[in-house]
Image 1: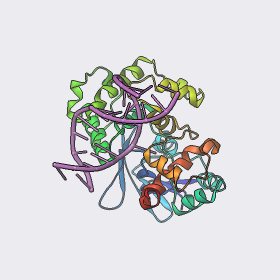
Image 2 (image 1 turned 90 degrees about the vertical axis):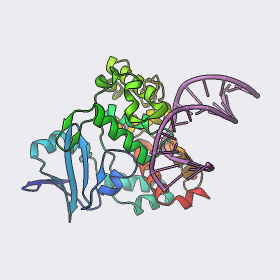
Image 3 (image 1 turned 180 degrees about the horizontal axis):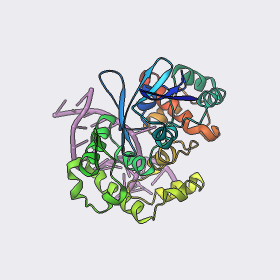
Image 4 (image 1 turned 180 degrees about the vertical axis):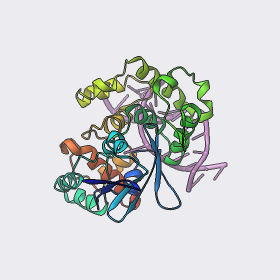
Amino acid sequence: MEYKFTERGAEIITKNEFDLRNTFECGQCFRWNETDDGSYCGIVKGKYAQIYRDGDSIVIKNCTEQEFYEIWKDYFDLDNDYNKIRSEIADISPELKHAVDSIDGIRILNQEPWEALCSFIISQNNNIPRIKGIVSRLCENFGEKISNGYSFPSAETIAKLSVEDLAPLRSGFRARYIIDAAQKVASGSVDFESIRCTTLEQGRKELMTITGVGKKVAECTLLYGLHRLEAFPIDVWMQKALSTLFKEINIYNLGVYAGIAQQYIFHYSRLHPELVNN
DNA sequence: GCCCAGGTATAAA
DNA sequence: TTTATACATGGG
């Protein structure tokens, strides 16, 4: 992957290795929104960004070289060769090959662990538009004001609040889960940095000490927040997809990129609901 | 109004 | 150990 820095901002030279819509709208994140002109806006690590494709360039508007290397190269996982990973996934089964070949350029974002944990706690028994609304209100109410929006509030900030304080979020029964997660993260009883080095199983176990964090949310936190690409979240859609379209594959035999395969399976079945709903 | 949403805690079998 | 139900809220 090549980069250049122009008067427009930082530019990533890439064709089918990075599709903005498939990356931002495959269900892995909740703070990127498409604008009228087709660009996407989002906030990462307290930095607002506008990003769009122009020919063979993905342009991060007004982004300096320093900011690109500090935040975006890592966030967009630009050091991984996704075409190579896709061909490895395609080799596993014909069904997977079809899914991977029909969807361009999903990348697994390197999100901040606390944001991923909190977002996927909110996601449980919930739909994506509403999840985005709750996350948005969480930031507006308790994040820091920055230009063009609000940062994601820290676990330390949320840990000092009560369930009643979260009422403006209208997050329902999840409010107490958010508070418990914030307190355990802030106190260090759940420690993301140590989980980066543990086994998946150990990481899942530690995350599941949080009330409201079960197997699914734990696995999402490992995959999206700690970038453990072998993690494999299973939700209702995945179960449907695995029992119909993809029943030939063994999920325990997907290797180190299981999480990326999962993302293709998930997105493919969302794009073709009739194929998994019969 | 009705069904349901990228699940999990809790109680019961 | 496995299975059933409630959960807050609001999008479609």
